Image 1 (cartoon, rainbow, N blue to C red):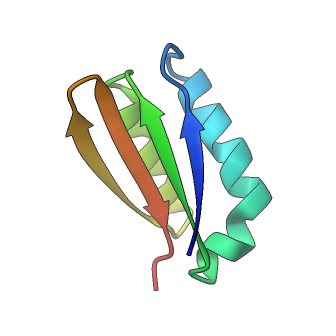
Image 2 (cartoon, one colour):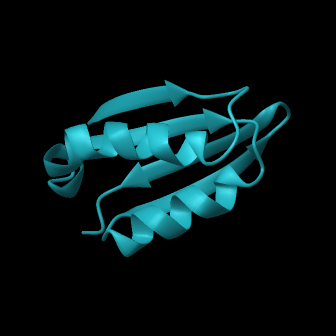
Length: 79
């Protein structure tokens, strides 16, 4: 499985969402096929809501994990 890491610490929404969607759109076929996942590192708490809600509406799954210095949002196939 390929992992695409996006470190957007220091950014605030909507920039966090837009940067994530740009990467997801570039790799959506691979993510849908289950070959790739996207892991976003952010320190913007709002992104932990906006990113998962948006990608789940697009048919993907996501998880959010709290870390000491921020959050990890994992985006992956719904299958």
